[in-house]
Length: 217
Image (cartoon, rainbow, N blue to C red; front, side):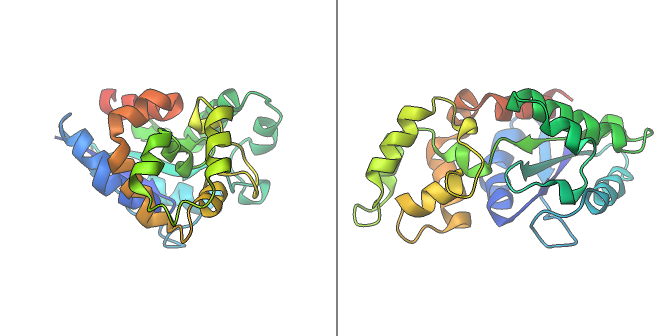
């Protein structure tokens, strides 16, 4: 059985890995572990700290290491490799490809072949904007308070990964306005389970490519 360590930015991502991703990957004979970023116990840190954690995990024989970290909230101050150059690339998918390749290239040469870099475009919560009917079915009517914004979001974005990258319009901030009492970790894996991993993969191409890399590595 193949063992994969997915370093998670926060509790939302870890719960998703445990409750949704792990059952999916076990069918491919893949066992996953999903630790939080150690130094912060969740939450983004400088690349130098994350790099050390990645390389420490890679010291274990045969293990594959990857990550589930949002592009949203990353800034130059975190010193990710080739960040300034990457930010000049207008196409977001190409930008993240460039940044991921730079991360891989900065890992020790002897072990980097077992590292799969991944940044979620733009934010994990974007994956939850998959099927508008899910909101009507799963959220109590008295808590679904932002129906107009919900409808507009689905009208504007066929690909939920493209829901944009600032404090007012990021997926998580939209969800806080749409759902009264929105709880990020709870709704994260709850919605993801209700959608189903196959449907998430079908509508989110970068995420789907990441899962394919894990399966086929």
